[in-house]
Image (cartoon, rainbow, N blue to C red; front, side, top):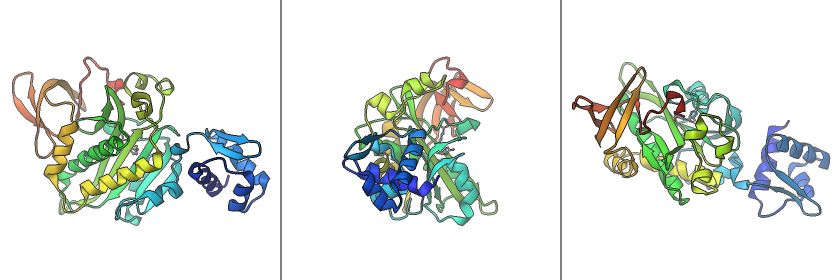
Length: 332
Ligand code: BTN
């Protein structure tokens, strides 16, 4: 199937105010009615609800869930981030894709996939990334920064997602270090991966991968995610427009990570949305778990905690669970 014909039809249907006639689609694509019909048929088999209305044409259900370059690029108001935009129907992982092609791609390249077959999460977990439910986005950055400060980009990504959702009236909280929650349910995860130049200790590049569940339904989630995950639609009842959200997110991420990098205002934005301060929590790192009380956040976005023996310590890796007795496999 011709990918560009599919993308063109999706972009036309999603961008139209009402139904688009078969004749118009034939004209725009320069193909026959039969060819248009074949593409529509394929789109339906891929899960798109395309209604054919006699005498008026084709209409797409949920037009805001179409993420094509043709719909996102005109909305971008960034200087660099996402200006090289790659939109894929399916990929194993957008982070892995960028890692493979990093040396040939410009700073600020963004990759979006409609679905990931092996989406990567933190701590070697898989990130559930079905088609038509979310935004799976990775960006390639080459900041002039020591590797030790890369965690601040994860912080920036969490704040950028929160701000972009707030523009839609959806107000998530941040669970250190990089999960976004609506109520108790996770709606977004962030995985930042870095390549470091060994001699200088400086970053060669960073890949910030963001997965936001925008439109998923609880009942479609596999167990055990059904107990812990949610989407903007299921938890806040808001149907976010995908292209506008993606463009807004890239703009906010650029504003938060651009030069000069302003660490204090960023941390303040992060802290305002952080739901773990003052909480008792389980601190989880590979092979180790302990109960702590979370006291504060330091200037490098590390947690200051009190452990069971009353010792105060700084924690800059791992994650926290606010759920009592939560099983490891319940984490998304
Ligand atoms: C986590 O919560 O454990 C992090 C999840 C990160 C998922 C995103 S989706 C886009 C990008 N590509 C990946 O393979 N992972 C990140």
